[in-house]
Image 1 (cartoon, rainbow, N blue to C red):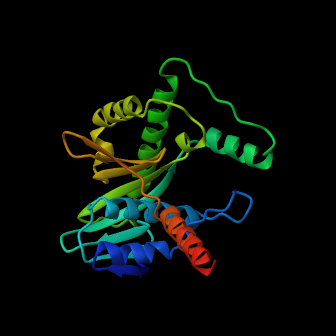
Image 2: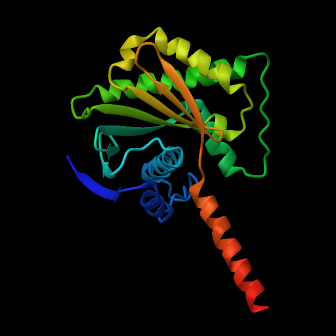
Image 3: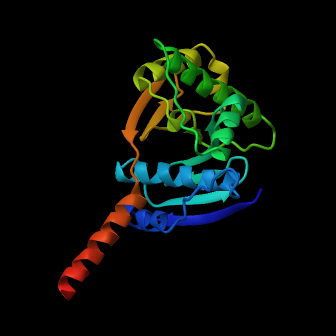
Length: 233
Protein backbone atom coordinates (compact mmCIF):
# COMPACT_ATOMS: atom_id res chain seq x y z
CA UNK A 1 0.00 0.00 0.00
CA UNK A 2 1.45 3.35 -1.08
CA UNK A 3 1.89 5.57 1.99
CA UNK A 4 3.76 8.87 1.64
CA UNK A 5 4.77 11.12 4.53
CA UNK A 6 3.11 14.49 3.95
CA UNK A 7 4.52 16.34 6.95
CA UNK A 8 5.40 15.95 10.63
CA UNK A 9 5.17 18.38 13.53
CA UNK A 10 6.53 18.44 17.07
CA UNK A 11 4.16 21.19 18.29
CA UNK A 12 1.17 23.30 17.27
CA UNK A 13 3.33 26.12 15.91
CA UNK A 14 5.16 23.72 13.62
CA UNK A 15 1.91 22.10 12.49
CA UNK A 16 0.44 25.53 11.81
CA UNK A 17 3.45 26.39 9.65
CA UNK A 18 3.01 23.25 7.52
CA UNK A 19 -0.75 23.71 7.15
CA UNK A 20 -0.46 27.39 6.22
CA UNK A 21 1.80 26.39 3.32
CA UNK A 22 -0.80 23.95 1.93
CA UNK A 23 -2.87 24.98 -1.07
CA UNK A 24 -6.44 24.22 0.01
CA UNK A 25 -8.20 25.82 -2.97
CA UNK A 26 -10.96 23.65 -4.45
CA UNK A 27 -11.75 24.43 -8.11
CA UNK A 28 -15.28 24.33 -9.48
CA UNK A 29 -16.73 21.13 -10.93
CA UNK A 30 -15.88 22.29 -14.45
CA UNK A 31 -12.52 23.81 -13.57
CA UNK A 32 -10.46 20.65 -13.09
CA UNK A 33 -11.61 19.62 -9.62
CA UNK A 34 -10.48 16.17 -8.46
CA UNK A 35 -11.23 14.24 -5.29
CA UNK A 36 -7.74 15.15 -4.04
CA UNK A 37 -8.66 18.85 -3.89
CA UNK A 38 -11.51 18.25 -1.44
CA UNK A 39 -9.56 15.64 0.53
CA UNK A 40 -6.65 18.02 1.02
CA UNK A 41 -8.86 20.95 2.05
CA UNK A 42 -10.90 18.93 4.52
CA UNK A 43 -7.98 17.23 6.28
CA UNK A 44 -6.18 20.58 6.60
CA UNK A 45 -9.30 22.24 8.04
CA UNK A 46 -9.76 19.35 10.48
CA UNK A 47 -6.13 19.40 11.66
CA UNK A 48 -5.99 23.19 12.02
CA UNK A 49 -9.23 23.22 14.04
CA UNK A 50 -8.11 20.37 16.28
CA UNK A 51 -4.65 21.87 16.68
CA UNK A 52 -5.83 25.31 17.77
CA UNK A 53 -8.20 23.66 20.26
CA UNK A 54 -5.44 21.51 21.80
CA UNK A 55 -6.95 18.26 20.56
CA UNK A 56 -3.79 16.80 19.03
CA UNK A 57 -0.86 15.02 20.67
CA UNK A 58 2.71 15.66 19.51
CA UNK A 59 4.86 14.75 17.79
CA UNK A 60 2.42 13.88 15.02
CA UNK A 61 2.83 12.76 11.43
CA UNK A 62 0.38 12.91 8.53
CA UNK A 63 0.66 10.44 5.66
CA UNK A 64 -1.14 10.61 2.31
CA UNK A 65 -2.24 7.17 1.20
CA UNK A 66 -5.20 5.26 -0.19
CA UNK A 67 -7.86 3.21 1.59
CA UNK A 68 -8.02 5.17 3.85
CA UNK A 69 -7.04 8.55 2.40
CA UNK A 70 -4.83 9.67 5.30
CA UNK A 71 -2.99 8.29 8.30
CA UNK A 72 -2.44 10.45 11.38
CA UNK A 73 0.08 9.10 13.88
CA UNK A 74 0.71 10.38 17.42
CA UNK A 75 2.70 8.85 20.31
CA UNK A 76 -0.40 6.92 21.39
CA UNK A 77 -2.49 6.26 18.28
CA UNK A 78 -2.52 5.54 14.56
CA UNK A 79 -5.69 6.98 13.05
CA UNK A 80 -6.88 6.16 9.55
CA UNK A 81 -8.99 8.97 8.06
CA UNK A 82 -11.25 8.44 5.06
CA UNK A 83 -12.81 11.55 3.49
CA UNK A 84 -16.20 11.61 1.80
CA UNK A 85 -18.68 14.24 0.63
CA UNK A 86 -22.04 14.11 2.42
CA UNK A 87 -24.53 14.47 -0.40
CA UNK A 88 -26.79 12.48 -2.71
CA UNK A 89 -27.09 12.10 -6.47
CA UNK A 90 -29.96 14.59 -6.84
CA UNK A 91 -28.14 17.19 -4.74
CA UNK A 92 -24.96 16.79 -6.80
CA UNK A 93 -26.89 17.26 -10.05
CA UNK A 94 -28.54 20.37 -8.59
CA UNK A 95 -25.20 21.86 -7.53
CA UNK A 96 -23.77 21.10 -10.97
CA UNK A 97 -26.70 22.84 -12.70
CA UNK A 98 -26.25 25.99 -10.61
CA UNK A 99 -22.53 26.05 -11.36
CA UNK A 100 -23.33 25.91 -15.08
CA UNK A 101 -25.97 28.62 -14.63
CA UNK A 102 -24.47 31.11 -12.15
CA UNK A 103 -26.98 33.86 -13.01
CA UNK A 104 -29.76 31.96 -11.27
CA UNK A 105 -30.15 32.55 -7.52
CA UNK A 106 -30.88 29.48 -5.43
CA UNK A 107 -33.74 29.80 -2.94
CA UNK A 108 -34.51 26.96 -0.54
CA UNK A 109 -37.08 26.92 2.22
CA UNK A 110 -38.31 24.17 4.48
CA UNK A 111 -41.43 23.70 6.58
CA UNK A 112 -41.27 22.45 10.15
CA UNK A 113 -38.25 20.20 10.74
CA UNK A 114 -38.14 18.69 7.25
CA UNK A 115 -34.71 20.17 6.48
CA UNK A 116 -33.18 18.80 9.69
CA UNK A 117 -34.51 15.30 9.03
CA UNK A 118 -33.37 15.38 5.43
CA UNK A 119 -29.91 16.54 6.51
CA UNK A 120 -29.71 13.67 9.01
CA UNK A 121 -30.86 11.19 6.37
CA UNK A 122 -28.24 12.43 3.90
CA UNK A 123 -25.46 12.09 6.49
CA UNK A 124 -26.75 8.66 7.53
CA UNK A 125 -26.90 7.45 3.93
CA UNK A 126 -23.35 8.74 3.42
CA UNK A 127 -22.11 6.76 6.42
CA UNK A 128 -24.00 3.63 5.32
CA UNK A 129 -22.67 3.82 1.77
CA UNK A 130 -19.10 4.45 2.87
CA UNK A 131 -19.23 1.71 5.52
CA UNK A 132 -19.88 -0.86 2.80
CA UNK A 133 -16.71 0.29 1.05
CA UNK A 134 -14.73 0.40 4.30
CA UNK A 135 -15.58 -3.25 4.87
CA UNK A 136 -13.91 -4.28 1.62
CA UNK A 137 -10.73 -6.30 2.03
CA UNK A 138 -8.35 -3.66 0.63
CA UNK A 139 -9.26 -1.07 3.32
CA UNK A 140 -6.81 -1.11 6.21
CA UNK A 141 -7.90 -0.66 9.83
CA UNK A 142 -5.93 1.14 12.55
CA UNK A 143 -6.29 1.77 16.28
CA UNK A 144 -8.54 4.69 15.32
CA UNK A 145 -10.70 4.90 12.19
CA UNK A 146 -12.37 8.20 11.35
CA UNK A 147 -14.81 9.13 8.62
CA UNK A 148 -14.33 12.78 7.62
CA UNK A 149 -17.55 14.08 6.03
CA UNK A 150 -17.76 17.30 4.03
CA UNK A 151 -21.33 18.45 4.54
CA UNK A 152 -22.11 19.56 1.00
CA UNK A 153 -25.83 20.07 1.59
CA UNK A 154 -25.59 22.46 4.56
CA UNK A 155 -22.71 24.43 3.06
CA UNK A 156 -24.83 25.27 0.02
CA UNK A 157 -27.51 27.46 1.50
CA UNK A 158 -29.56 25.30 3.84
CA UNK A 159 -30.88 26.97 6.96
CA UNK A 160 -31.62 24.54 9.76
CA UNK A 161 -31.33 23.92 13.49
CA UNK A 162 -28.11 21.96 13.58
CA UNK A 163 -28.59 20.62 17.13
CA UNK A 164 -31.87 18.95 16.19
CA UNK A 165 -30.40 17.67 12.92
CA UNK A 166 -27.55 16.02 14.83
CA UNK A 167 -30.03 14.48 17.29
CA UNK A 168 -31.86 12.92 14.35
CA UNK A 169 -28.60 11.54 12.97
CA UNK A 170 -27.53 10.10 16.34
CA UNK A 171 -30.93 8.42 16.70
CA UNK A 172 -30.50 6.71 13.34
CA UNK A 173 -26.92 5.66 14.11
CA UNK A 174 -27.97 4.23 17.49
CA UNK A 175 -30.52 2.03 15.76
CA UNK A 176 -27.89 0.63 13.36
CA UNK A 177 -24.90 -0.56 15.42
CA UNK A 178 -23.42 -2.45 12.46
CA UNK A 179 -22.57 0.87 10.85
CA UNK A 180 -20.29 1.61 13.80
CA UNK A 181 -18.12 -1.49 13.43
CA UNK A 182 -15.57 -0.02 11.01
CA UNK A 183 -15.48 3.66 12.03
CA UNK A 184 -15.18 4.83 15.64
CA UNK A 185 -15.60 8.55 14.97
CA UNK A 186 -17.36 10.80 12.48
CA UNK A 187 -15.91 14.25 11.87
CA UNK A 188 -18.53 16.31 9.99
CA UNK A 189 -17.48 19.70 8.58
CA UNK A 190 -20.68 21.72 8.62
CA UNK A 191 -21.54 25.44 8.57
CA UNK A 192 -18.37 26.68 10.19
CA UNK A 193 -18.31 23.90 12.79
CA UNK A 194 -16.89 20.42 13.22
CA UNK A 195 -19.39 17.93 14.61
CA UNK A 196 -17.40 15.15 16.23
CA UNK A 197 -19.45 12.01 16.86
CA UNK A 198 -17.78 9.23 18.83
CA UNK A 199 -19.48 6.00 17.84
CA UNK A 200 -18.80 4.02 21.01
CA UNK A 201 -21.77 3.06 23.18
CA UNK A 202 -23.27 5.43 24.22
CA UNK A 203 -22.66 7.74 21.28
CA UNK A 204 -20.96 10.98 22.31
CA UNK A 205 -21.24 14.27 20.38
CA UNK A 206 -18.93 17.26 20.57
CA UNK A 207 -18.90 20.45 18.51
CA UNK A 208 -16.17 23.01 17.99
CA UNK A 209 -15.57 25.92 15.65
CA UNK A 210 -13.67 25.54 12.41
CA UNK A 211 -10.44 27.54 12.57
CA UNK A 212 -9.69 29.24 9.25
CA UNK A 213 -5.93 29.35 9.56
CA UNK A 214 -5.50 30.62 5.99
CA UNK A 215 -7.79 33.61 6.46
CA UNK A 216 -6.00 34.39 9.72
CA UNK A 217 -2.63 34.30 7.94
CA UNK A 218 -3.98 36.55 5.20
CA UNK A 219 -5.18 39.08 7.76
CA UNK A 220 -1.77 39.06 9.44
CA UNK A 221 -0.01 39.63 6.10
CA UNK A 222 -2.36 42.48 5.22
CA UNK A 223 -1.82 44.07 8.64
CA UNK A 224 1.95 43.78 8.25
CA UNK A 225 1.82 45.36 4.79
CA UNK A 226 -0.22 48.26 6.13
CA UNK A 227 2.28 48.81 8.95
CA UNK A 228 5.11 48.90 6.41
CA UNK A 229 3.24 51.48 4.33
CA UNK A 230 2.61 53.61 7.41
CA UNK A 231 6.31 53.45 8.30
CA UNK A 232 7.31 54.48 4.79
CA UNK A 233 5.01 57.49 4.93
